[in-house]
Image (tube, rainbow over all chains, first blue to last red; front, side, top):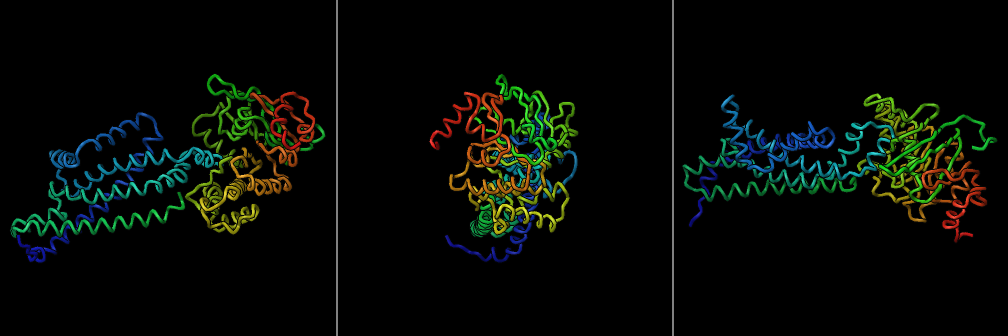
Length: 217
Length: 261
């Protein structure tokens, strides 16, 4: 089999556009899933069962069903009622999915902060919620960085699943080019390299962040 | 306190305090007064209730009966609920410095931020004023040069001194020490004791739960021996450590001081 990368070069601007869309989705989803995951974790730990059980059910639901199915539910389910752009559905679906995974991490790390920290803060005069805000959550967040990093790398790879509902990220962008050039392998190789590079950069970033916070743990 | 020493007003009053953990009564009607500027030490075997008593003063343990007062204001308020009590206890605690056995410094904050967090957030102090105040407190415990270091880089003794500075930064009316040197390597105990002695020289009101008999004897105005949830004996430290009235006190001291005599 002979490789011919000319079509890849021709359609490279399209692929880059796909990288752009994927990156945009990933950044919004990262922000949404980390902030949302933290809020879900705090609420599910520190409030009563009426509030926390539905949230735990939400976490359980998103962690036990496939992402693709969740996206179909949101896209075609919501599509029955209102017309939402695929990219918004994709961000919401991926966002909720990883929000559940991140909440699961935060729940574990928040619980791992010793009670002595809570008592020391309260003994200074900080209230319950101020203690959570200034003392518990920052420490839990630092402890969460390694696992959060892993989740975000998985998430970046999962942006490719959004091609199933027509979000023009990298994989979707390549499909038209493949269908006219009949050169799937060349495209797949280049796309794989692109994901590889992005994720290596993310791993480097994660390692740097871990080094920057190691002495604060 | 003995009558000749009651020259001042009470700072901490503990009145007939009872505390139960399930069926186990760990405090069985404790009475105690710490006068302004005085230092009281509580000694006793583990499980005697001495730590529970100290934690009750800070309301880290909720007492079942009795009353605790700080400078005439009742700390425990069974009549208050929810947010009203939360505000009340937060205000009370700002006037009490608590030092823990395991330091409990905030590892995500530098030394100076550990000291200044409460003044900034609770008293609304601006960063510059808070830093000056924090440096002053760190100088007091001899650690000004460690201001921008994180707790994990400090020795146990240094951590405890920072914890004392953190409590002092709120300008407390009383300092509570819960076995402040028990988790330290023997060679690090003295640097913490030195800081506590300097507070004594400044007439800080202190309530100290300790296993350091020699230190308690040196520094205290009054000493209590607790066992089984009651105050077995209280008197001047010299009498308590050299010539106690009670058999239980003698037995305890023999076990702990046996080798030193």
